[in-house]
Length: 398
Image (tube, rainbow, N blue to C red; front, side, top):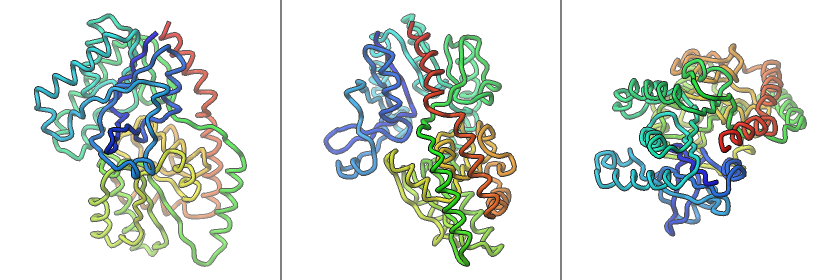
């Protein structure tokens, strides 16, 4: 049985030798999940347009696992913008996609809308190929908060497209327990199952976290480190509003905070924001980290903050919670399924962000939220979710 996995979010990075690497949206463990249910797996993924040296690639990205899956790298339809209007490139991409779908027995499409899904879904219907969709985010908010103003023009169309596609899909996996299901109901078969990977939930992590907090708060002078893991050029991730909140907190006399950001892309605009608001010395850009190093970073920070305007169920938040890290989030998407509502804020509201951070800066609250995070993360235990997901995937494959 040949399975094709079509994804816009799984972006491919190439080095000078043409060797492929995965960004943080996809890793070996996720690919192995689908390789186990078929005889042959092919990933059709978007070219990230990122080109790096082999040395930089080895330090920042995970190599593509060709032992598990074949790879087809499709054109990035929006970068550069001229690609969108280039008839020759579009034709080549659609020919690639159509050939891959025609040769597959089953097709999984990891988005319910956007460029690849708009063409892949009717191609599956044309060739009578059983297909499954993933519902992983809220389309209107994603496009409306896009850095490019043209995103706002596409937002209503993409929202309607997602609702229509999900409603008619024979199989759907939602990454939330209820948030996406309420917005995009499905008439076919579906489950709610996050795609996060949380395993080895060792209680020693919680003990270590509480010990670290107690030691820190016992000192006369200490620094609280906040962190966000997200694309540095994605305006919808909202990091600049945390930077502005740092400035507001500084005005209140709280100047012992540091904000660390990891993720791909240029941080130039974020550092300009930090310079403008007088907190450049409090903002640290760490850039891209391989997936296994992210956990060490989460162990080192004190508070994880997710200021997004759009989310499905944020993997980074769940991973932070699995390391017993206190979290504060915007009210976007499935964040409210994760975060304590007392410490959630309206996306882009600088005053609310500052208040949430300030209200958490006591040892007692940080301890309580560390415990809450760790207990909540158990709901996303990899073994439990794998059983649910794999059962549904096997039903789809049959």
